[in-house]
Structures are given as structure tokens and as C-alpha cells.
Length: 404
Image (cartoon, rainbow, N blue to C red; front, side, top):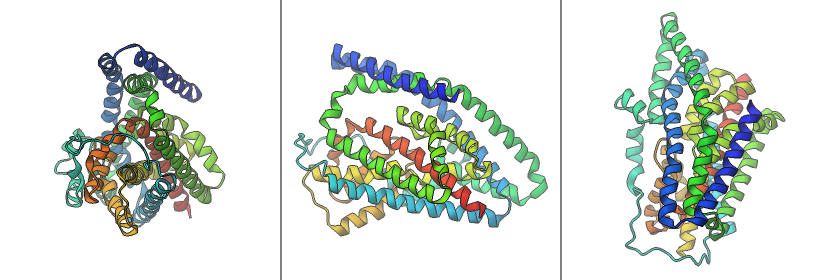
């Protein structure tokens, strides 16, 4: 079934490109937008179903994972190892994006017409201040966090719940058993939803190509190609770091996560791949208590592809405007993005929001965002897949370290 599912995803992608190309070539832009809207209905339904699963699945798996970890000392050890890896991966991702964009210089001499200063950008630049991020992490209501799919807030409540259940010992066993059954039910529901994935993949690709056309990639070839080259290098770095800990099994891990990776790439959504990633990591041999603890945290604090995009896209826009940033400004940018990028989970078009805030901070015209909006969907596919790779490697590494 595993091989067939991957095949269906690939077929959905190819058909999506072909159908989108035919629609784009044979109808006017207004009609193309309307057709893309119909395709998007299928994608929206699938992503809504995924969002329906994410909250209960993250809560139940994380609480059960914490309880199964056992004592506070073990929990602290796993937490320390996890945060340590996440910080290192974040620094590498941000720094690699910074180095690659300056080496490739995709924005230098771009020749694209820059938007007017008065042009409006539909991204709220001030959405991620440090104060707002810190206060936003803590939920006002568990039910509000669940209904809004606020992953960070769900993680915080789950941590409190898991530690509390561990503290009351035998009295908490019945509730833990119920949550174990909730996990099983949610994974079963996930299986049903995933059967719809190839259709959603077809619709997502068809909608994008119908409106943008495949020709848009040629216009931005240097930018898109440079970013994907950077992602490939990041994959190599992450997998090499993983192999230093788990050895040659990193090859088996790469094979094991190909389904969630393809799913994230084709739908441009890391969330869509979460349930399947969790399932594959457990099949790979990662203890359930580790996978259930590390992976949800990774979706809040370890979005490697998205972080690389923030530095790469910000400096690309600066290059397009002919703005040079000093070494001190670039160092400040790294520190700023280390903080603001941690608020990405659950924020619509999160990378663009973070980039908008960063542009504003360094006096780069926010209208430069319009330069990347045309190809953002194509880039989002790559960074979503990279987020899956980064979190899969992080989870297996932490599991291996915990054995020692």
C-alpha cells in the first residue's frame, strides 16, 4: 500500500501540472482564476480535514508521550536534547540561507519592475512582535486554542497536562489509557483522510499552474533555482548530521518518510504531513513516547525550510532594491529571525509575515514582498518538505541520544 500511495501522489502531481497547463493556455486570466477557485475547493476540504485532526492528535500524543517518559528527570533530559538540536538546526538553516543568497545573488540585476511605493501589501508586518509572540504562546482557553489550531498553545497546555498526569501516579492511569485510545482513533481517522490526498494534490497543483502558468518559473528561474539548490544543501547538512548519530540508518529514514515528504511538497503544507510523519517514525523504530513528544515541538520550533526562506527571501528583496546590509545588520537579522521564526506555527502565510516584519525592521520597502508573491506557492512546496525532513531527523537523533 505504501508504494501505491506514493505512486498515486506522483500521478496526482503530474496530472495537476498537465491539466493546469491546458487550462492556463486556453482560457483568459479571469476565467483561469475562476477555474482555479473550483480546483481549490478540493484542496481546501483536504486541508480542513487535516486541521480537524491536528489539534486532538497533537494534544493526545504529546500528553501520552510525556506520561510514558516517566519521571521529571527523563522529561528534562529529552527536553534539553530536543531544544539543543532545534537551536543548532535553526542557526544552520538561517545562516545557510544568508550565505547562499549572497553567493548566488539572485536579486542583483533582476530587471523586474519594482512596485510603486504606494502599493499595498496584504501581509500584516506587525503581526509578530516579540511581546505578542511571548504572550500568544500561552493559551487563554484550551478550547479556543483547539478551535483555532494554535499548535504552540496546544503544546503548552499538553505539557502541563502530561506533567500533572505523571505526578498523580496510579490515579492518572485511567485517563492516560483513554488518551491512548484517542490516539488510536485519531490515527484511524487520519488513514481515512489520507485516502483523499492524491486528489487534493492534483487540485493544489492544477490550481497553481492554471493561474500562474509554468512560465512564471522561467521569469524567476535564478531565485527559485537558487532557493531549491540551498534546500538541497540544507538536506545534505541535516542528513549528514543525522548520520553522525544514527549511522547508515539515515538512508532507511529517508526512504521511510518519502510519503509525508511528497505530501508536504505537493500540498505546500507541513501540517498535512504531520500524521503520516508520526506514523512512519514509529515504524522506523522511534519509541512512541519520544516521537509523540519531539515531533509536535518540532512543528512549533524547528521549521528549517521556512527559516532558511526568511533569510534568503529578505536579502533577495534587498538585492532587488540595490540595498546593501552591513555585517552587523546581517548578524542582527539572524538574531531577530531566531526569535520571530519561532512564532510561525499556525500563522497563515507565516514565512511572509515574518519576512514583512524583518523588511520593516531594516527599512527595506515592504512592497518588495510583491516580487516573491508570484512564486511563493512553488517555494512553499520546497520549504514544507524540508520542514518534514528536519523534524524527522531531529526526532530520530533525540531518540538515539536518549538510549545512551
